[in-house]
Length: 252
Image (cartoon, rainbow, N blue to C red; front, top):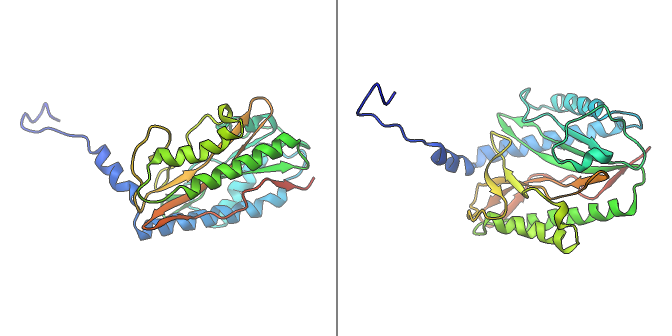
């Protein structure tokens, strides 16, 4: 187009638009809040279906059905991640035909959409009783999530929220097993600015919404992640999600 018009120059507006989108107004925040509630209700409706021998893929299908039944937009933000046993040590796993087994950790990462705005949550469960180290890393991850959420307020940097969550896991001796950023922005996309990671000195401001999702992943054994959705307010932060964050043991 510039070649066709010598006096015209096109400049990328990507960063300008991204900055505008980072700041959600009241109606946008309300849509995200509703998307979170839909997602939470859908998960609770799905959990009674868990049984030994059920596959990751089968539970993901049940959860998808419940998301639609509870009011999610048909165009969901992403397909649910359901990973069990050793697969739960992969934070980006896809549901497989692996059946649930006694002693498994079960990571469920899912979200809903409402009026085009999305939620993105993660909770970890135990299929019956699990080994003591799994219980320990679940407790540590929950504490890291709490530290990250407590650090959220206007005037702090994105990297300081990351370090607040990461510091708990590092102090517990599992730092090398937390190898992704603490969070990412949410809005009309599943991943957008601001990114809650080391080195991002962006100052958080009211209206910025993002995830807080620390995790610990033991290769070949199992993993834990706890993810919540928050928005910065004028005097702190609001956490949209309120499902229990501790390791929940599902009956066999």
